[in-house]
Image (cartoon, rainbow over all chains, first blue to last red):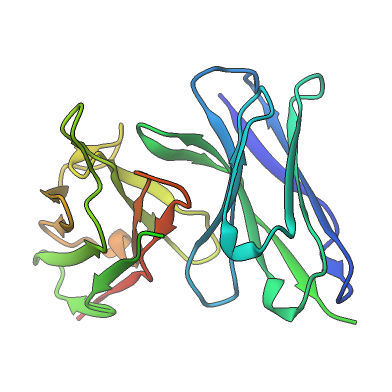
Length: 119
Length: 113
């Protein structure tokens, strides 16, 4: 079955760029049925949708992140990535990748990875 | 952005009793062309990612027990757990996926009385 796995540094310094990758296994990221998304959750808080990408490279993002976010996709490696620039402590969160179906919601999630912003 | 609110913030229910969570969106999430509400419900247990329970406001995801049901349309929605089980202790979130940015409610924590 399809699985998603996040990877990347668990600690990022303030003002630097957070970079995460989500690897999709058991299925093709080039499916025309899905977008591939990122959602984050600060410790003890709720869920925030960051954005998503289609296999063609078309993206949606959350304006609340003020253009600090970049989402890209590598269909040859079956993975997609997130970059958040100029991070602060407020970007400390568990970051989830998810398969996003714009008809049926997010049925498939990675396990999440905690990223801490600290010097 | 569509703002999602939930009530109550938390509730405690006796085992076997009904739990009801409300969700309200700041604008309608009903897509007129197909008469579907683009509203999902998720369950999140500690240390786990959210799990999709309900989509289109009232359609249960495959494998979800039938004690979970969703209702509502337009801007007002409800998730009902008809007979609370111990394994249902979790935080429940609603999410609109009608328009980006897709937004979540703040969550409702369900516990055992």
